[in-house]
Amino acid sequence: MRIKLLFTCFLIISFTGTKLQAQDSSLLKMLNDAMGVNAKPMYVTGTFKALHLVNMQTIEGPANGVLNFQVQHRFGALNSGSYNFFGLDNANLRLGLDYGISDRLAVGIGRSSLEKTFDGYLKYKLFRQTVASEAMPISVSLLGTISSYTLRHIDKPYLNAKYRTAYTGQLLLAKKFASFSIELTPTLLHYNLVPTPQDHNNIFALGIGGRLKLSNRMSLIGEYNYMPTGQLLTTGLHNSMSFAWEIETGGHVFQLVFSNSQSMIESQYIGQTTGSWGKGDIYFGFNISRVFNLKKNK
Image (cartoon, rainbow, N blue to C red):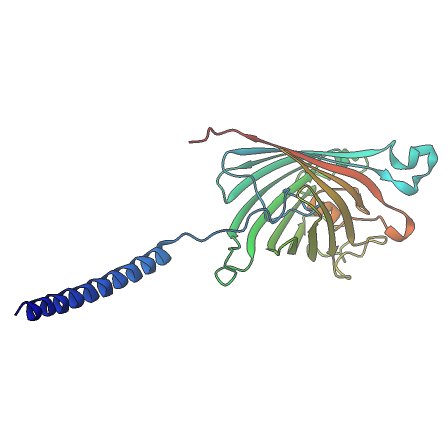
């Protein structure tokens, strides 16, 4: 009788334990499924370390409440000879301020000494690359810029603000691999005034650039902007090609630059570059940026 009672208890406990274990397994599976559904995507960070690759803007923007101060400097051409100290006697300087309205939306303004040009832009990050590449394999940003030069031309009194203004629209497509990042930038330029009636006011160009990480602090950068022929008939125009050695030092990003374009504004370096690498029209310079957090951390 006692044996029957023990056997009956064993069967009840075994059945109950199995049932509870099955319920626990089912509940755990449901919990994991719920966590998987509600889990936030992990975004890829540091595709590029600066807001500019060399001259080209990157997909990156200042974080919400962060102010970025940018200095872009280009000396004269290396082939200008010893009298001009191989270009070091001449220089073009751009000072820029960039601010993160949100983590996705950024605004910026700048002033260049070349043609005494003012520029401004808005940049919005549409998509961000995720760690799980099947979710979002690339990052995508939209960029819109406006520029206007204010250099006085006494022989051209008709040059009012309208004729001095140009606009740029860019789609910035980028992808980060383990130690290499690449960016593609289809570009549409609009000039309110072009040199001749045969020149196009709307110009299409395509830029490509990459960053190769050498260490935690150093990278090599290159970019090339291709403008199909037949759009601007001005003789002596060349596609802009630039290289840089990038050094990150805490809150600063420093780049040593070599380029055949002395300008750093889209409407100028894409559609108005006259320097030729083959002829030694190489402009040495640097980019340096420093960030300031204007909002207190919560």
